Length: 219
Image (tube, rainbow, N blue to C red; front, top):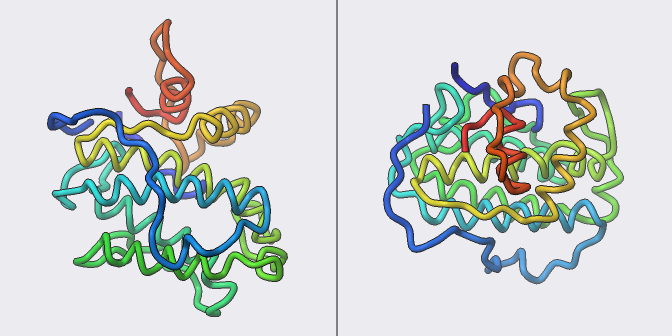
């Protein structure tokens, strides 16, 4: 059974040898000079740092991902759509959510980097207080980031790693917080377009494996 893309949080490939799991690397460029203005925005930056690291490891953007019907390019395009929720409060442009592959374009890594830096530039106190449209209706951008955008980036970091054939080590704090936040809404996240059925984790599963299994991925 396939795994539904997690569009509202807002079949695995063969892995190639890797020297070890990827961990978030420090971001370079404009994003490094911006101070965190809220706990949620700080955690979002941390999740994006991990995703950025994996984006840099992708060699085949047409490789299948654990998300049914999605390639590595689609995963990045979907995350770009979430990033545009943030930049849109400053640019006035609506996020593009319909066609993730088109969102990523031919240069998926370049497109992601440009959109990421636009979003980081929009993470100001004033913008975080602005209302945006979320899965549960309008809410402040800061709340949208904490409830939906950060978990979405975190989970799709693992998906992109699988598509790229590299092991990914997700941020332990974000893993724990995302898992604990999803547990009480188990039934809700099984709806179409969110997550597929849970996978039974191994008896000795660590926190990351438990999260990945909970959101319907086979570790």
